[in-house]
Image 1 (cartoon, rainbow, N blue to C red):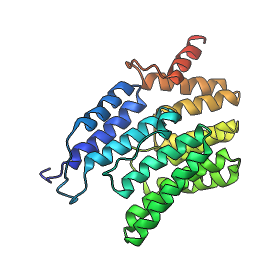
Image 2: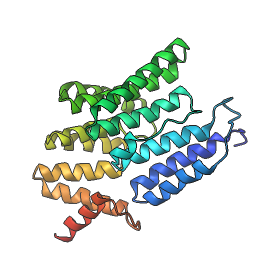
Image 3: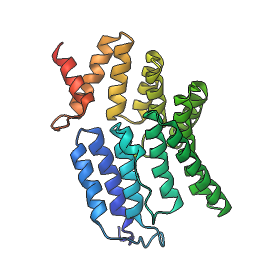
Image 4: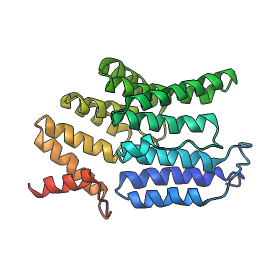
Length: 260
């Protein structure tokens, strides 16, 4: 497009990592992340001193750990020293969610506090657009902390508000949808009927997401809706057809379908 921005390569990589993670090609997603790690520093001519490599390194690693449900890995992600505040917020977001879901509330609260500090600095610098994105990071991370503390109404309300905003704005499907997180939370609370409704609502906006399909199948299974459960498990297996993924969710889906 002759726009002179190296960032376009990383934007394409963003969608590639997303697609790999949804289709059972986790090793390919990891290879993209390793490729970014091996690259020298970049400068995107479109955005001044913005380094798209640093942004991609932080966001790809955060999303990989969370999408794979590797909570300990997410909680131990290291902030990148040369990253700007908005990018480091993503790392603290993943760390907080990982720690909260692993039951380490002390560390989760520390990372939420780091996000709050980043938000305040950005507001003082009048970087309102970035500050708004960072505030969403804080709200999502704080919701998982609240859930771990037993404040479920507060947690679900926060995620639902974010989900409605995402859907109204038509955000690109490269992150983790807030409605899927809401459904995950409900499933964790054994509210299978409610979780199923949220998974199905999100799959309309973000079709064929690995965790969305598995979550919907598991919620339907827990609710005693075997036909619907089998349909979602089959859809997950089909989406990952041709992959050599060893994710336990996919193995379980295949095993259950083989029994039918």
